[in-house]
Length: 207
Image 1 (tube, helix red, strand yellow):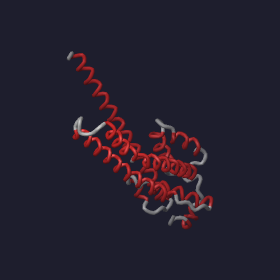
Image 2 (tube, rainbow, N blue to C red):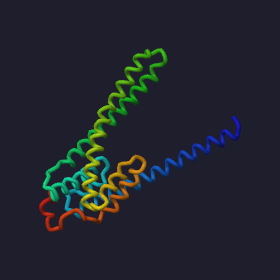
Image 3 (cartoon, rainbow, N blue to C red):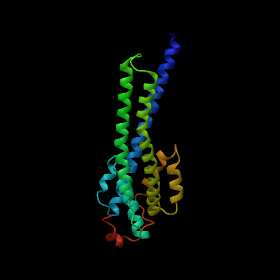
Image 4 (cartoon, helix red, strand yellow):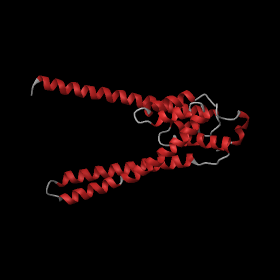
């Protein structure tokens, strides 16, 4: 094996590790910005358990609560987006773990059985069965995404109605949303341009 080939492989691995490190830092920063923004908005508006904004999986409860509060105060609508988002998020997390474990078990079983331990059709059947577990995960993911978009629109509208559509569009575009969404939430964290005066807070603190 030539030194040039080894050098090229090492460079490729280093580049991959660097990109992975940068991606991880961006993800952590996005998480912190989003959590801080949702926590700040929820705490200022009197939403209970604002600290849940920092908890993975269940942080969507705060996003939904801000949306429900806005709908109730401004439009008189009683929504339960916080409950839908929390339920979908927990179910999705549980099913994702189950599906992943099922797939790993299937792969391990196929490997340990040896080339003659199981026929081709059985391999296909086992793999398809494992992949079928991801169907409800996909469905729940789509439902959760739709409700999150609606809730996010309410959050942007309650904070900065002049730019709500722009913020929402950029927050759902693949490749842009990872940075745009936490950034816009962070920029909106101290604004209530779309909310009534604070004197009406007593009506919705318990939502």
